[in-house]
Image (tube, rainbow, N blue to C red; front, side, top):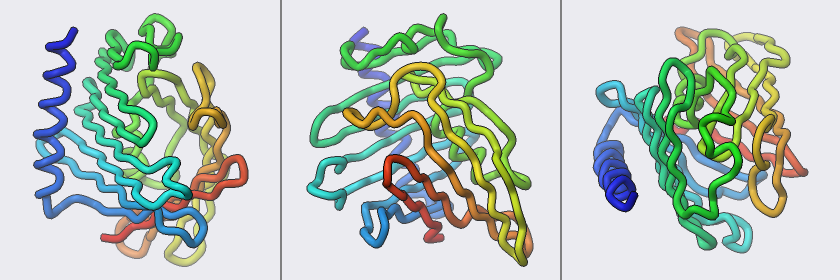
Length: 220
């Protein structure tokens, strides 16, 4: 088991170095109201997608930390670090079914860390961002699995005004614990805004829950 985690960590480090040097990476600022929290980048190299987020200005530093994830559509690996904890996750899927999940430390596992408990036809968090970015029109419904919970994302409405397409989505944890202990948020409203003048381009994502409005806006 230790060797598997060592491999996970080494693979992630190599991927993040490549992503950090990739000029094609898409960058987004992350803010809460008027407060800038950090940055998010997304890049695809050789069929492997990498997502890196850094939060260094959250209120009282409570949620400061980093998230680094990599996905080729079948294998997903992530490493998250905060002032409170460090967590590593690796999943492997076959035809949309999860067949293997590793979570470290062990006490971060949930009932949904057992592949037998995971619904069919799920994608990982890195692939989720890719689906938002690469959407044609508003995204269709899909399920997410992050190693600890399963989430259903569904379209609510979509409207185009001029060169802007606004897609309202619902995000609901259907299996496993909610997000952000001790809040355990299970329902989030999502608003995606695309620029449609020449080709569809994701400009902004807004997430609303428990009185918080998180905004992720394109920088390049």
